[in-house]
Image 1 (cartoon, one colour):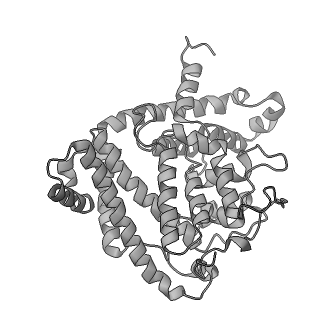
Image 2 (cartoon, one colour):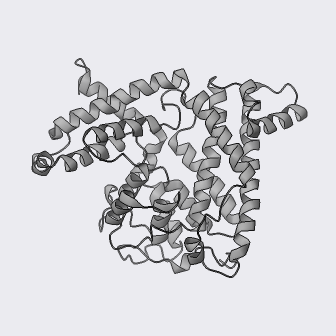
Image 3 (tube, helix red, strand yellow):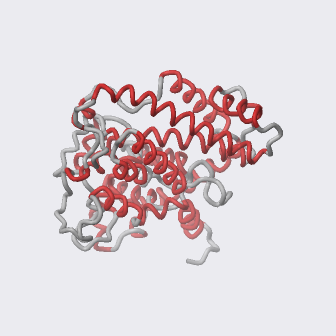
Length: 388
């Protein structure tokens, strides 16, 4: 702890938990370490193994899933927090939790859920809000409370790692975090900001690696995109004739190194103004203090645009997107019309009387599914020859 910067979150000065708990481990673990362990041991975290990153999880078991993505984000976060003298445990914890609320089938599943909600006059599905619901309500394993009873700083990072929260989303989060003023209108801690940029670094680089190995991207096209082009020039100069699989891996790892180096260099400059100041000054600052340099940000935007056109909207991905969208919509319409498939007779009355309550139950049910369980449930419900 003596190596922490003044503006880092001090693990011994947590603002506490919603439910007071006596020390259950003799004080050996710090509060944010306990939060990390609770997330890793949660059902929602285990389900990430079978949730889509880009490719549906049954397509190729060597490509990334939400679980392996979250682990990569956590590793990058921990290393960058250490380099910046921040609270590694808190950064890692926010990184591990950041995708808990994703629906099956990735962003295609989110879009399908949002379409179903819009048809009923309701707001879009928001995976950050659903993550908040998971850690405060939907994980039901502990004897004394529902949720994971995480520390204030962890909840703040989950809620605000992408920046201040405003409007209807802020109102929904305030209801979930009743009793906790998470100061949603301010920026998150520096540790949570590191987790957010680590997410950007991880998915943009490993999507290149997965896209190449799946045969949906090619090196020639990447050579016209600044960030991977720099990596390719270096690889080809040092290792001419490298096999394609090694070349793909080297492109990803060299982009990761360059992006991390840029964040660290740029953020050290931004953080220099906060020497001797506290984490509250980070929160109150008008902009993020963990950021890419302007030039690198432009290169990353170029890569994102390339991936959107050439990978995320590739015909092969679109064909799966069409099928997975149908699965989500069919299940939503079925459960909305037949809540008795989800609820006992005791829980039916409110669901039948209030369409908003019913839609919320249906959304939580579908969002909690893995790719695998959603496909199987659709088969059970819509294949007349399937036997339950």
